[in-house]
Amino acid sequence: MKLLNANFLKTLALGLVMLVGLAGCATMEGAGEDIESAGEAVQDAAN
Image (tube, rainbow, N blue to C red; front, side, top):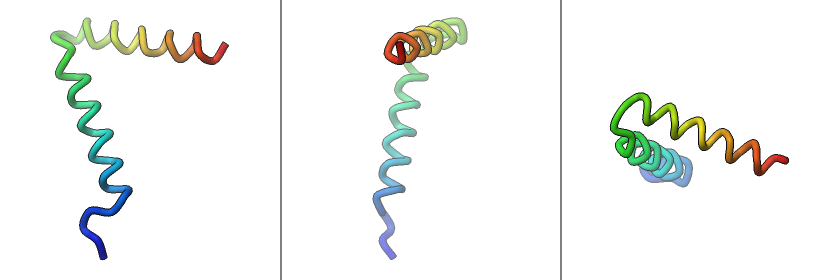
């Protein structure tokens, strides 16, 4: 059994990306604005 399999590394990478993203938001208001802009970008890409 490998300790560092591909799924673990993917999960770890995703967690680090999320942590860095949340650390970039100074306030909850900032986090809400970031989430809103990300949602709008997804909607625009879907159209």
